[in-house]
Image (tube, rainbow over all chains, first blue to last red; front, side, top):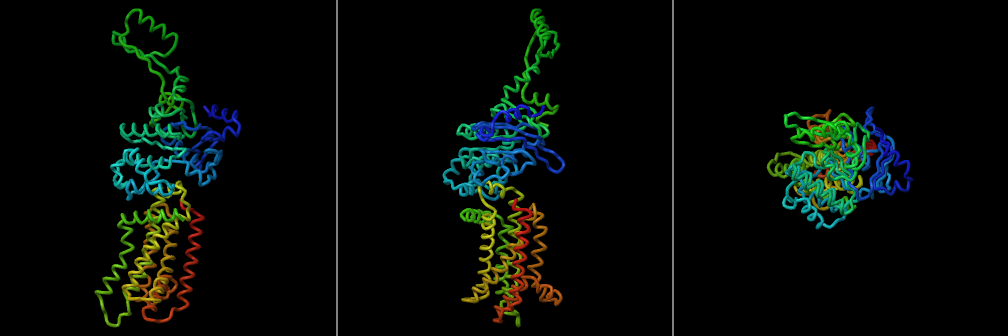
Length: 301
Length: 231
């Protein structure tokens, strides 16, 4: 399962079209010492799209984000962000990027307001925007609270606030809801949708397939540094529809787990005719089961 | 330049909430005020405590604070985020350096006032101290750049600081140490301050040692910056 679809895409598009993509990644590989963490990754992202990079821990998601944002130079391949070569990014491109990564520190002793005000000053943004963003992420009441006293969820929201403060064209979110409670997660999802509606291209990594299905227009499944599948979540699920199964409980108490085949359909028809079926459910594939089939691993591993 | 001022303001706020760093700027000036007023010993050189604590001040505060601030920003990735905010390395170093220098010079003014210096002597006192502070700042920056965490920065900064801060004091009691200390910029700062207090002329050797130390510190800084960069 090499990245045939992406490779094909790159072969058919000319360079001009590639530049028109918001993000264009071509044949990127990266090594840390002897370990190859990314293997010939190709991917293109259109403007105003939310793309999700799914994979278990250690798959190479964060490394890829660092390469796209110019924090790491790939061993080989090229990355363009709005046409800018991220192997040697111009300082101007950074004003168009917002980033929320787990290891992107906050000034722990400074208040939420001061943390954001610092960046507002650097981006030459009016201080009203700081208050607006604090309200937007629900931290206005805690604006005077030092970052070190915030809960994990609040820290996540503060980092998101900092990432969107300057209304970036590109938003990179590295596991934005990892370890957060469902309420905060839902809130962050709404904020991400809001940004996308305003025209931001969002690139997020996650190992939560529900999050990816809910948020992303396209997802790329990453395993051991390789993209093993790419497409719209529903499209991927349909592609693997052979994994669809029927779970049947008979009045006799017997449970049946049948594949989606003609033979099984005949069997079900027979049970229906003889009125033996108490309950019947179909289980469609989801990104988790697709990933499991493709890699033999679970996303959450 | 504007970014440097923003970094400067950020550092003022951050240090104001960081007792461990803030205390380094006020500790020795405060000690000088207390000791100058509390202890009067016959035949003691004029403004003995001002000279002694002033040298400890330049040996400790700029070196420790520069190393601590840079290494903390690197460790917690706040520096990376500043670069994403279009801050250039030079702007960052000017902002942090500007803050450390200013804070140290506030302490220096306190020393000068306690020492009773006025007019040209006051300015000479500030100049001598400024030279020592700059060398210490460069050494602190080198440590901050070459280390990846605050703990490793402290591990190197503490003994370095102790050598330069306490060598002049130890030199008063031991001739061998005094001979070695002659090559340390902090010892020459001490001798220049003593000369200023007693009204004797500054030895060219003192200026030479401080100048050579500054050149070495600049060289080390350039080497460290080229080797590791700020990130």
